[in-house]
Amino acid sequence: MRLGDEVRYRAEFEGRLLGWGTTLRGACERVHEAFVRSHGPGEWQGYPDFAHAEP
Image 1 (tube, one colour):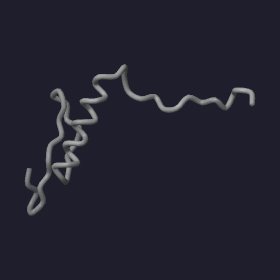
Image 2 (cartoon, rainbow, N blue to C red; image 1 turned 60 degrees about the vertical axis):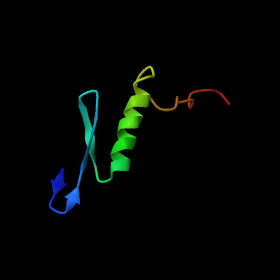
Image 3 (cartoon, rainbow, N blue to C red; image 1 turned 135 degrees about the vertical axis):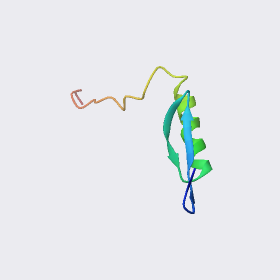
């Protein structure tokens, strides 16, 4: 899409809009990340909290 002199690239995966990139590379990275994540068990939940564990 063109917005005046700027170009925006639509990043979409499986019919879901992921966002708009200012570079083709950035838009492709978003789509690739969504593709790779789609092969895993789900969204990454972060690192576990071991603060309660004894030293």
